[in-house]
Image 1 (cartoon, rainbow, N blue to C red):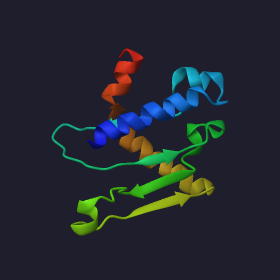
Image 2: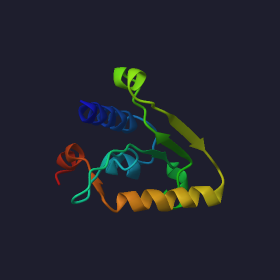
Image 3: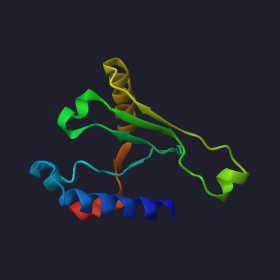
Amino acid sequence: VYQSLAYESIRRMQSYQQNTTLPSSSRASGSTVSLYEYGRQGWQYHAKGLWYTPFSEGREAGPLATFIGSPNYGYRSQDKDLEMQFFILSQCENLRERLRVEVDSLFKHSMRSKSQRREKGR
């Protein structure tokens, strides 16, 4: 269920970006919104991450905004688990660089979601 919701959200964001004033190279590549899946042989790992880096600053600048934690607030989260989420917004170059290194580490074992690979013909 969550995966289909994520795919639908990505589809809507990409549709929106096609109709905005983003640079044409960004619209053509679909590079501003992407969904990746983490996977390693023999590992069971569950996590979600959301990072935002302004297109004008480039990926090397590191994320300006980072969400940490779980955005699940359904029945299970209310009655069975403790769910928390933090939002970090920082212009501190040192912190942004450290977050970029962490994100790069996660992406070493990630690939575009199956639905995005199909859309791109991969």
